[in-house]
Image 1: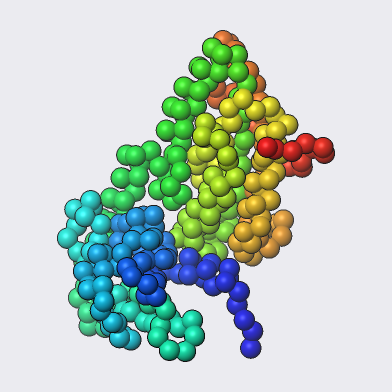
Image 2 (image 1 turned 120 degrees about the vertical axis):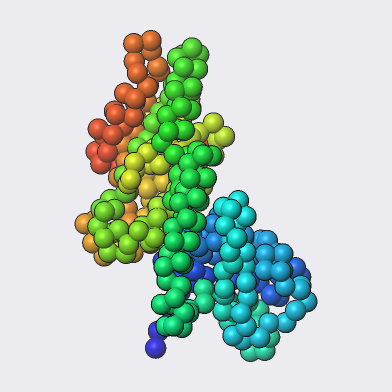
Amino acid sequence: MFNLNKRVIRQALDLSPVATIIVDMKNHPHLVVYVNQSFEALSGYDASELINHSWSELSGTAEDQDMESGQVAYLQCHPRLGVADQICLDMLPIYHQPGTPHYWMGTERELSPADLDEQDHERDALLSVLRDARMHLRRLDGRDSATGILNRRVFDDLFERDWVMARREKRQLSAILFQVDDFEAYRDVYGRHAADSCLAKVAHAITGTLRRAGDLVARYADDQFVVLLNNNDAATAEILAARIADKVHGLSIHHPRAQSGRFITMAFGAASTVPSAGMASVQLIEEAGEKIGKENAVPQGLSVC
């Protein structure tokens, strides 16, 4: 026998195609503590709209109601999608120690073969509507549908604004362009949902490392992220980029076809300039892109505050 550590179990849940939600039942109110990406796609909710929210309000059950193993629960899909439908969940107990279960895990209920024959087409159509609506809403508010950070269109607008201000103030701008190594091979192995989950973790690692409100991060292309730093020189940007790349490697996201090892890694390029009247903003990004993989080491004797 062997024991799986919590990180491995969390990754397995994140990658699962089965919609899964976990509710903490130790205290009142009972709060949702985890949902995977499949649950987000099915329900139309973002994880942030469910985590730490009351289970009784979401499911319509009484707060003091005791659940029984195998009980069926229902949760409404997000009302903004305009689809009047519920998710049917099988609720199963999770024990931290013998006795009363501390958590309950809900998974999308599997239908019988007869039900599947009758409902497959309708369900597939509904899921398609939900996913399309969710992606459309994210595009409207300027977020990338997979990661929740800025999309390319909104980043370009904000970058142009910062570029004009920096040129007027003769202030330095730095750009870092990250590229996830062998990402297409990762998607070929694990599929689209796992690839989106991987990108979301990378995005979280990047945003969690940035410390200043004026810094921007966006998904720039399928396997690329861009960071714009205000009033930072190239050396400082390179240090920050190396720190982020190390943080992503430390996530230990398994990649069986990675050429650089067993886990997801990122290459980066950094560039810095004081904008001038004859220079286009996109040139800074292009310069950073040309340096990807050429400067992925931290200069000695420097640190980032």
